[in-house]
Amino acid sequence: MTTALTAEWLKLRTVRAPYGIVLAIALVLLFGAALSSLMVQDYDTSPAAEQAKFASADSSVVVTPVVQFLVAALGALVATSDPRLTALTAVPDRTRLLLAKTALVGIASAVLGAAALALSTGSSRLIAGDRPPPIAPWESLGDVLPWAGAAVLSILVTGLAGLGLGLAVRSTAVTVVVVGVVLWGIPAITPMLPDPWNADASAVMVPYLVWEISGVVHDPPLSPLAATAVLLGYAVVTLGAGAVTLLRQDA
Image (cartoon, rainbow, N blue to C red; front, side, top):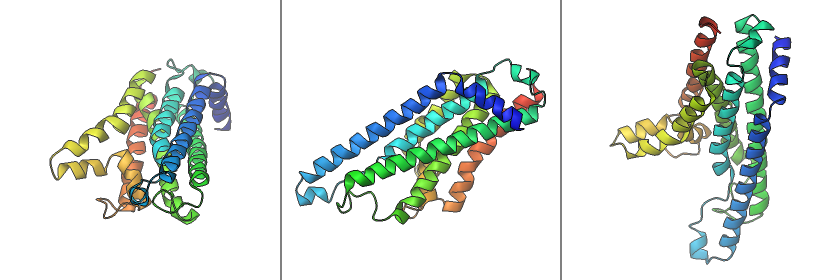
């Protein structure tokens, strides 16, 4: 297992695409910090009546969906970078190869997610300074931990989902398109459905599950535990499909 994991890590760090993904995450973090700064500047020059209507200057709300997508693309890259499965020459055990890819994507997703959330929430707090709500993202560290934890979990899940879809369809382009539709396309459509389908459908979409898990939504359709189960279900279903493809089909 260690040898297979080392080989997967070597393949990942010797191609350019992962570095491009990390660079894209860094650019998103800079954009989020700039957005928070502009909001705070606008807040400072607004009258008190307008200040009360401001949204939070928490850039992690903007950063999280983009990082979810980029990490899913990383998972797809790990799955599809070896379309002919030449790695089976070195690691003939397909189960071990699957576990190595899953471990690599899981670790990378968790690290990137934790780093992105720490940097985005930390920069937002520094930019907001001692300004009061609503512009202040939160009042204490304890207030942000549930949201940050839910966001990191969602990034981990989307990374594994990208891996599973990539293994199932064996195409980076198709995987990235499907992930984009699931993360952004369908959630944009579900609120347009008639009642009560709009609320029920939106409640199981990844972007809304993060809010439900964190417990910051008033009277959410799903409890934090149920929302966590649904979110993990995305990873279980996609990894299951990928595992069936890898273990049962020819290289």
